[in-house]
Figure 1 (tube, rainbow, N blue to C red):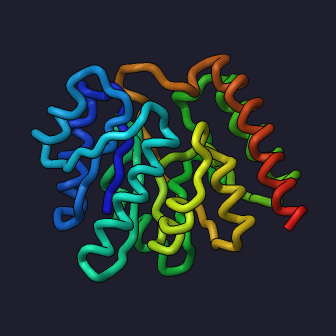
Figure 2: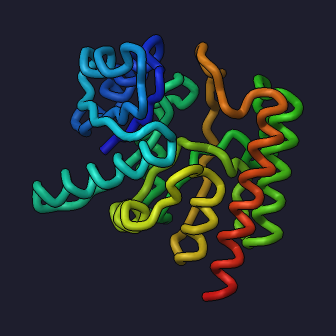
Figure 3: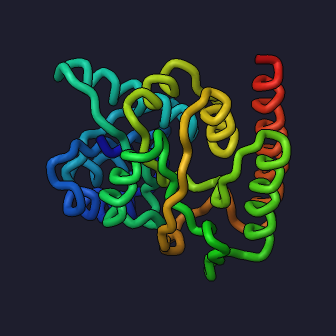
Length: 231
C-alpha cells in the first residue's frame, strides 16, 4: 500500500497520485487528508486515490494511515508492505520499487538525500545544519546512524506498520520515530534518492524554522533514548 499524508496540497497531490499509480499500478494508493480546507480530497479522488481523513497533524495522519493499512490487509487475509511519501512533489514515486526491494534486507528503508556525503543543492544553509546536527545528536544519544534523519519517504514491512499503528507519537513524527524503531530492534537502512524541491506551499523545514524544529525534535529523540535505557 502507498500512503500519502496531505494537508492542503490540492495544487500538487493529483500529480503525485498519478505518478505513484504509474510507478506501481497494481498497488492501492491512499491519501490521508489531515484537516484539509482546500480541494485536496477532490483532486486525490480524481487522480485515482482512495481518501481517508484524519485529525490535523502529520503524526495523526500517519497513524490513521497505518491503521487503515492493517484493516485493509486483514480484510484480504494477507499482509504486505507499505510506502509513505509526501504530497508536495519532493519525493519521486519512480523510486518506490527500489525502496520496496530494499525490504529484502531491512525492516525499514529510508530514501536519503544525504547518505554518502550527498548535499541537496536546494536546501538552505540553516536546514543543512539543522538536519546534520539532528543526525549527529541521534547518533550520540541513541546510536542511530541515519544521515537523512528527517526523510518522510520510507518503506516499511507489515510488522513495522503494526507496531507503529499500536503506539505512535500523537504530535510530532520524524527522527523520534526512527529512534523508537531502533529501540524496538527493527533493522533500518538508507537508500540514496535524488529529490525535487517542494512545488509551492510552505514547508515546516524552511529557513530558520528548520533550526527550531531540530531543537524540538532533538528533545524528543533524547526522550526516546531515555526510554531505551530504562528498558
